[in-house]
Image 1 (cartoon, rainbow, N blue to C red):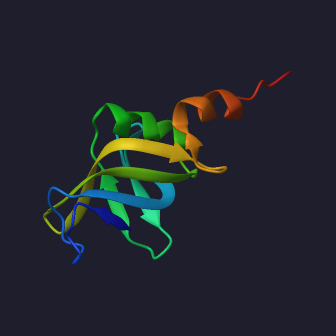
Image 2: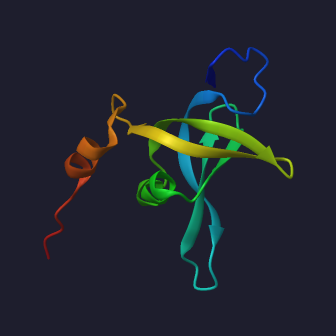
Length: 108
């Protein structure tokens, strides 16, 4: 995790943080649909993603590697991140370009 804004101790608050990891499902509805996602980092820390516009976009990228930046807060012993920007692998390209490049056409 990289902190922007001067907090060297890694405390949650109003600092812009950058983390890399994999998008994973974090909560499901009664029909089994994913309703919340998290980023699981390589050191096995999970950051729940707030369900704002950018957070909802990340539901389409479950099991994809990402770099996300946003504001981190801690509530009820959970780390929650409000996403400001994200990039997908490969090469952590901007997400809007990755959607088109990762689209697949399935022929029957």
